[in-house]
Image (cartoon, rainbow, N blue to C red; front, side):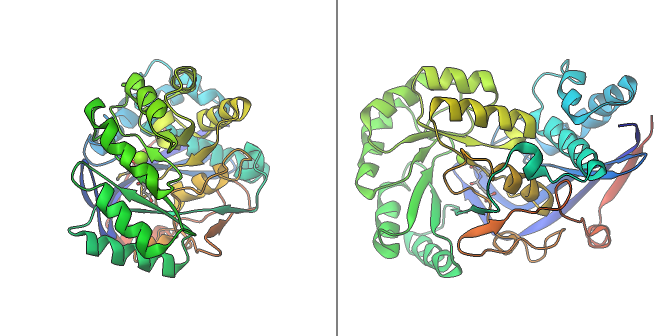
Length: 368
Ligand code: SMG
Ligand code: MG
């Protein structure tokens, strides 16, 4: 592809309700979109990093700067390229995987639109709908959590994920399990809020028939995750620790997890995500698609990825209405606790640029 223009759009999109995790509260998305125009097509990518470096070390101001100062110039200096070549072209930039993933997504979208190929078929997807769940933030009271959980079940979600932290774990899970019954799939996510001293406490979650417990400990503390996996019967899943194929291999060798959360923005892009999927499939380890409160753009990438065969657990890929009053693409709609996989070229969604402009988006243009 010969790239003619790269454009960065940035705007805020309010969430329908605050989302609180063990590391902080989010009221809106600070969205960066990458728009790539080639001689014969246009592609879009979404940068899913947080506004603060709390989930991982990336944050939106830094991701924007990395795109402007390094990634865009490196791509322009390289000349015509494919989406597959992108990771190699920007390999000198260490980390910054959310920024890289956004650029790669836009390149892949442009390339596949030009070829008339849908993202899901390019990646090797085998499903036309993907099962999804909803991630529920920490609430002021357990009663609130029960109410919110019941409302999502009423909306049609067959799988709930509860955010937990020290002081908000066993009792909230017990109450939600009692309220929603055994038929609803339930899992928890600690976002690294616990330490090795908490293993016996976390083992109390075993009685609630959870699908998994996600990332109880620090991302680089694989040995404590392995110790936990030996001690508890609930499967341990890693999120923040899974930053690459190599990190996944190490985690599996150490038996630090038996389930893997794959996030495009955390591992550096859709192609690395597919590689991690393939590795886990070879090892018989199920994966599922994580979420970063994406707009319709990033959600399209997640849905296509989740259509691959070893994505056997529901993803954190909820309908647009769970996040925003109005999405920036056509809305994603829940049906049978699933989303439909687009079959049209590329990501298969159209960005509502008029709406994005009304949100006050800044647009910065770059040419070779
Ligand atoms: O996109 O529905 C979503 C949110 C899923 O819980 C979710 N993501 O650790 O898995 C996670 C969190 C990280 C994002 S917190 C803003
Ligand atoms: Mg998580």
